[in-house]
Length: 286
Length: 244
Image 1 (cartoon, rainbow over the protein chains, first blue to last red):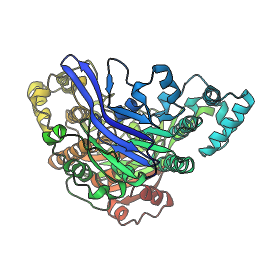
Image 2: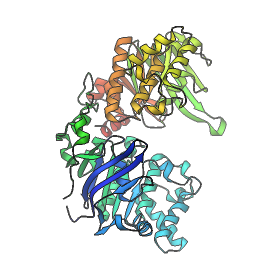
Image 3: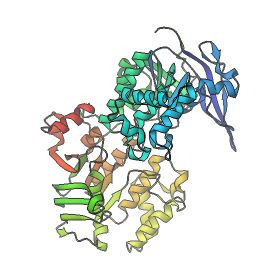
Image 4: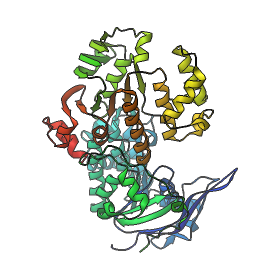
C-alpha cells in the first residue's frame, strides 16, 4: 500500500437518547491508502455512520468524537464548518445509496452537473457544459446530450447512479466514499457501475471506501475488508481471503447465504454471541 | 394448482400503452415451489399482481385450482391465494397493532375463533405472544416480514405468492425467513410462486423457475439444470454468470 490518505483513530459516534447515550460507532480505527477498502456489516452495524462521520455529516444531537481523522496531515476534527465545506466534494466525495433521493427532481441533469462543476471551478457556462458532457461519457452514458436535457425521473436506477458518480468525480477528489452504491440496482447493471468505479479509482489513483452489506460483492471488488458488528470492527482481512475469515460473526454471515453451487436443506441461522458487541474494536491502521 | 396460459398484461392505453407481460405461460403443480427471476421491469411482479387482481388490464387464461379466473375476483379466491409483499415496512399499517392486523384479516374471512387463531398464527411464524400488541415501528424488518407472512396465512390459503420476500432484509435475517417459508410449505402443504432477482435465493427455495426478460418468459427450467449451468437461453446464462 502506497502512502496513507486518510487516518482514522478511535472514532465514536454517539446519539443521546431518553435511555442514555447510544453509541452507533464505538472506537473504530483504520487507515486508507490508494486502495479499495470495503466496510461490510448488517443494518445498524454503524458502517454508514462511519462514512458520514468522516465527512462530519452527523447532525446534532449526534456527536462525533475521534482522536484524529487526518487527511493529508490535516485533522478534520479540528476544522471549522467553513473549512470543512471545502473538504467535502473537493477532497472527499460521497455517493449515496439511492439516486432517486440524491438528485434534485425539479432540475435537469445537465443543470445539476453544470452547477456542481461551476461551484468547484471558475468556468464559463459553455466550458462547464462541455466538461459535463465529458464526465457523462466517462461513466459510459450513451447519448449524453439527451441525458443533459432530461429530468431525474426519466432515468433508470443504473443511469441515475452513474450520473451521481459523474457529479462526485468532477472536483477530482482524493477519496470517494460509496455508501451502498449498487444495492438499488439489478445484478447486470451493478457490474457496470462497479467497473466504472474501478476504472476511475485506478486511473485517478483515488482511495475508495466501499460500504456494503453484500459480502460476496465486497470480496470480489475490494482489496481489504473491515467487518463491522454493533459499531465495532470485529475483523479485518484481505478481500480475497474473506472466505477463510476466522471470526464467528463473519463465518455466520457467509454461511447464512444461499449458494447455487452448494445446495442445502436448511440455511444456517446466525447465532449472535453477546461477547461480540463487548469485545474491543480491531484496529485496521497500518 | 395454477395454470397461466398466454397471459398479457398492459398499462395505459393508445400511445401510452406499455406491455408489461407478453404471452406468458406456465403451469405450477400442487405443492410445488416455482420461481420467477428477471431484472427490474421484466414483468415478474406484474404477473403476481395480475393473478391477485391488482393489475386490471389483462388477457389470456389464468386457472387456479381448476377455476378459470374472471376479471372480478370472488371471495373464495382470497381463501385460496394470498400474497406476501416485498417491503415489510410499507405493507403493514403503521397505526394498527399486530393483533389488529391479524384480527381484521381473520374477521374479514369470516372466522369466529379469532383470538385462538391469532395466538396460533403468531406461534406458527415464530414470533410468540409478546409481539401480539406491538405496532410495526416496534418490530425489526424480519419480525415485520413474519407478521406479513402470518397475515397471508390467516385465511389458510393453498397458494402463496411471494414478491421478493427477503430483498429488504439482512442476509442473516433472510436465512431465518427462508427457513420459515420452507418449514411452512412442508407443514401446510403450500404451493409457492416466488419472485426474486436473486438466483441463489430462488435456487434454494424452488424446484423450477422461469427466467423473464422484457415481459417475456425466455426459459423455464429446473433448478437442477440451473445448477448444472445447463441454461440454454443466452440471457439466463448471463444472469447465472452474474450471480456465481
